[in-house]
Each structure stands twice: as structure tokens, then as C-alpha cells.
Image 1 (cartoon, rainbow, N blue to C red):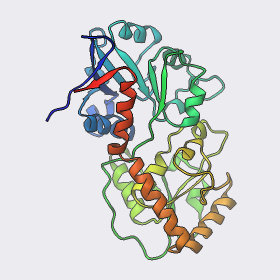
Image 2: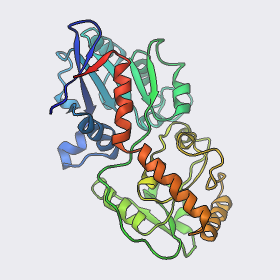
Image 3: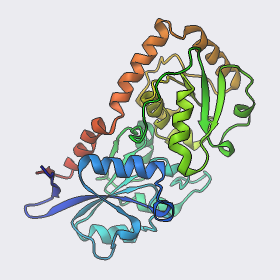
Image 4: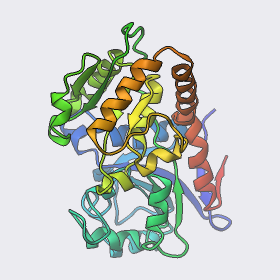
Length: 325
């Protein structure tokens, strides 16, 4: 049975849902970025709604649609406040899911890549899917009174596959890009630690799987003076949960949407704290404390599947009197 998704502001005024992605890398290479795949393709497929790339949208003609833009609005989609108002005048609803884009196209002054254009766009959108609960609070001062702010947790990538058996002894590591991490991560001299460079876009899914095949745990490390600490979604928690690998992590605000305040693998923002926590994990590995962590991450895996989260998208669209028939 085919599902039909629509939105009704008044009788006879129907809107369809369209997820919009940049799609530049897909057109050039046939490969989607992680955000486009996880926050565009996968929810659109789960909800059985349309997915279009930026170049496929006829902005001067489109009407009666709920447009869900993945990423920033001003640079990626070349939108302006005036263009958004024009879209809204034709019975369109504009929703942004920035994922982590507001770390790099920042609507606040005083940060790198501060953008007045992005601020102006956010001031008129109808809804923002916020990357975490603290980000939601921060965005309240920018958006219009009737803008709906809703946190929908970041899902794990359903392109991942189970990695099977892992090493007998405890292992952990950092998975990321070489030019985006503190140098100390490449210089750790611990027998249980490894660094995985995820490399170019086409290798990322395999590199992440290889990392977790060799690792019982993973590491996230950010400084609290970074905007990423405030505005990133807890994607590393969700990814670690898929692979059953409890995350050793700094206390990024987004992590509290999934982890309890007394989570035992939180660390301070220094490498002594990180090394101490790695030693703690080695000590509790396979003991009750470790098994409890595995149970916690099994629950997080359920909560961050696209199947589970699809209900939250439905709830958001219902805020606009959306109907599913």
C-alpha cells in the first residue's frame, strides 16, 4: 500500500513533504555525504516522501509543499530572507535540519564563519529541527514567534553492517579525519588504542566499520570553547550505539540528550582524564559495569534508528495540521 503524505492548513489546501539535499557530490561522484544520506535520503525513504536535490527544485514555481532543507540555507541553497518569504507566499512551509552546519555557517556574531545571511534566513523559517536540546534553547532568540523548534535525535547510518566478532582484549580508538583532531590522538602510545583516519568521502562508511570491528569502545573529544561542543548533534553516540561500543566522551551538550548525567565514561577536557578513563575501561571490561554500559547502548541504538525516529518527523508535520492518508 502506498502512503500519501500531505498537510492541510484549511480544507482543500494540501501540502506534500519534500526533503531537499545539496546533492553536488552525488552528481559529481555518485556518493552522498553523511548528512545528506542520514538526514535526507533515509528519513525520506522511511516516510515514503519525496527527495530532491537543490538543482531539481524549481524555486519560482514550487507551491503547496513542506520543504525540509538539510544543512545551512544561505550558502548551500543560496536562500535569502526574501526568497524564503516568497516561497511561503505560495503555501510552502520551510523547515531546516542544519545537522552540524550552524557550526560552520554561524548565525551568531563572534564565531568563525559568522553569517548575517544565515541569521536572516533563520528569522523567518517555519521550523528548525535542532541538533540538540541546548541548541534549541539558543535558537529561540533568533526565530520568529511561531517557529517550531524540535530536536529529533541524529540517527545512525543504516548503510552500516554488523561487524561480527571483535578482539578478545579491550580496544578503543578515535575515528576521524587527520586534519581535524588534536595531534595527541596520533601520538598515543597505548597498546589498546588505535587511530582511524576515515579519509575521503567514498571510504567513510567502510572506514567507520573497520574502526568498530577493531574497537570495543570509541572516543569523542571536544573543548567547551568550541561551537561544536554546543551545536553538534550526538551523532557519535548514535554511531557507537549501533556497533555496541560505549563512547568515552567529553561532556558535549548534545550528548546529554542520550546519556545520563552520571554516565561513567564522561571525561574532562584534558588528555590525562582521557587516559585515566581508558584504563578504567580496561579494568571493567567484561565485568558487570561494562555489561551495564552495553545494555545502555542497546537502548540508545533503538532510540536512534530511523524507524524509531520517523514518528518524531510525523509529530513535527502534524504541528502544521499534516494528515497521513
